[in-house]
Length: 190
Figure 1 (spheres, rainbow, N blue to C red):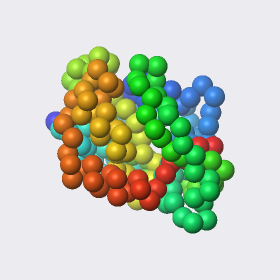
Figure 2: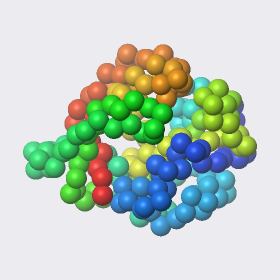
Figure 3: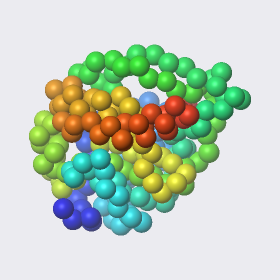
């Protein structure tokens, strides 16, 4: 697989999460979904990271928007702002326990890191695209590196495409690293 894809599109899965109809503070800011796609196709990433499987790549871009960091360290000062509930990412998935901050003002991210799946993998998951790569998510972070996938995402992936995953078996070391990170961090909602 080439490290520089020839074409990138937002998937139907990612579009409502990154560019919801009702804008939220914890999604991509200042640009439309079409402008985001155009930028990714016209600007080479600073670097390309391997994802958790051969069909997954992460493109590191300097943040060209006012999008804020998505995950924030948990401290004694902000712990009282943590919330939790059972939620599904879409109507086809079962709800899982999630937690987040409410009422927190995170810093503007230094990097946007779109998560790309190959055309072949997306077809296997029942989401064919007319491009070489499809954006399935985006990390907004201070460092030009991947934030560990949430433990529940690793588990869902191992369950297979029927349960909203990718069919990649769980990597126990990656799972432990994920738990270590997410034990001390949480996402926020605006």
